[in-house]
Length: 317
Ligand code: RVK
Ligand code: MG
Image (cartoon, rainbow, N blue to C red):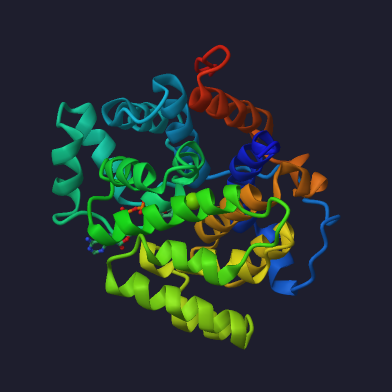
């Protein structure tokens, strides 16, 4: 595990690259062409969206509290949203943050906006730092992700999507050390965390689709490419597993599926970056990525927070 710093950085930078590539006309056109060209030069800066912005909030809170403090994380989400409300947030979270601002407890606010809770992919898209921080303990990971998801996504399908996404990041961080990743083992470990029928069925479909080949039409039909957690998390896991030796291959494949491309790109990038490490990310993309330095600093502070070494990073902006 000597390369943990590289894998932590790879996952956070990978989230932001997948997000910004999936949100940009340039990235979507590149993905549609179906040519994997890591030297393809973005037309300008690659700005990130709410997926990365909320991932930053999760990381900041884990770092400052040296683990999950859910009230702190809820406050940090609301503060970050107020600073940068232009990031393209989904419909629910801004309403929750405004209710919190008006004095409503987040536990009540989330259920007021969506009775029964949201099953959007918003809790899963921001889960990478939890997958990194708890990568060595899947039971602790599950508990932390369940709690952190409820801030905005209290529906069991929204929560389980986030648990599976965080666990995929955790398993990616752990694997690949010397021996190639085994997709059957990877999916089996995720299956052990799944209890909802839709996720169990889609994890099985992923295994079958990996054997049949990555036909995009079939993948969208069977796994989905939508804004709901169950129509995007399995798609990201498939996009990674079907392209596990290439970061740009995985992200461009995911973005090329269309639909909620920035979020499926972000989730795929988080897993692929955790597996391959930051050194495997295309330099020409990183050079244009908004906030790349900040994400790298957060990744190393997250690792320090986990192992209790070094100074705690305070928020810098
Ligand atoms: C714009 C019915 C529900 C539901 C429930 C559906 C950003 C709704 C990011 C809702 C991501 C949508 C994305 C999103 C993240 C959820 N009953 N429908 N109980 N729960 N939905 O509002 O943060 O792009 O159609 O919680 O998950 O880049 O509008 O937002 O792509 O899921 O938004 O759920 O969105 P929200 P989010
Ligand atoms: Mg987005």
